Amino acid sequence: MYMAAIVGAGPAGLAAAKRLQERGWKSVILEEHAVVGDPVACTGLISSSGVNELGIRKEVEETLLNKLRGAQIFSHNHEMIEVKRTETVAYVIDRGAFDRALAREAIAAGAELRLETGMIDVRKETVFVEHKGRGEIIKAKVIVGADGANSKTRRIMGINTGIENFVHAYQVDVKGHFDPHFAQVFLGNYAKGFFAWIVPENEERARVGLASTSGNVRKDFNVFINEKNITGEACDMCSKLIPVGEPLKATVKDNMLLAGDAAFQTKASTGGGIILGMHAGRICADAIHDHFASDAPLKNYEKGCNALNNDLRLHWKIRQFINSKSEEQIDKLFREMGKAKVGEFLSEHGDMDRPSRFIGKALTKPSMWRLLPQGLKFLST
Image (tube, one colour):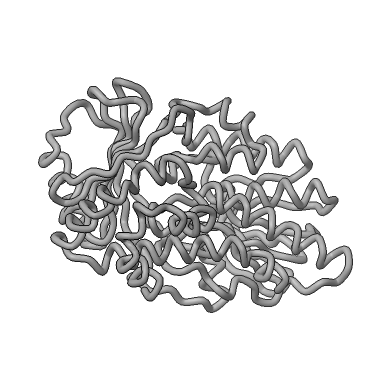
């Protein structure tokens, strides 16, 4: 009998497992693949502020590929907003190696990792799994579903999420010539409902990708690279679903809890979920600890996520706001944002993960007042 079974060896699940072990509760991590971090799940771009808050600099330094100072965001017709700092604002990491580093930390804390073990069903404290083609049973007091966008745990809990709450992403590694200091984001008709990106690993290699709701992301990607004249040797293809819906209000049912992508704890504005997912994993583990130690309700996890969800809902509002605009409206908005010196404001105050930390500061900048009508529309989204 384990105290907790964590389904999925991604950052959220591994953060939960490590925290539970540190608090004295025996946990097992169930990973359906043969290797943690394979296949690669995302672009691997994380904020320096998030790294500092989580205390994961060691794991980042082990897997670091590049340091970024900012981003260039382009509208449909090439209007640009540039956010830049003199210091590092984000890290590009080897995502597979990063997950494996987190797994080693969880195992060192005492968690058990079972590879090639896929969860089939849950009945109270019984977890039915398939291990290398053979059915097995695992006993656990609590089950944490950190099993990604296509979460089976979420379905077992009876939580239905429509296809409109996801975008399909496609990414390749490309050899070429890139500015190593800036990520680039492109809004365009080729990226319906989302955007395309170039994230440099160094001057000669970058992760080039696109996410959309069109239903044919590979075709969209080809249109994008042809339009931007991106050529060079491509390899290491990655394709996945990204949750971009509002964070789930109900993430606990009976003895099951959801964390990370499974709970829509991803930034709908950008699709990133590593940092906030790890925060959620730790909050989840703390709620489980309180449940075992003092019989506190597991539902306290949902309360513990209130601050996190406030930021996630702001990211969701940003996505809804952008998607409500036409190509012409977006271009006009970018021009207005340029006049309002939004790039300079975000360079000084912006936070990739926590928009609640800087949105209020916009009112203190007279140059930003010209955007008040758009701000009111955003708040009413």
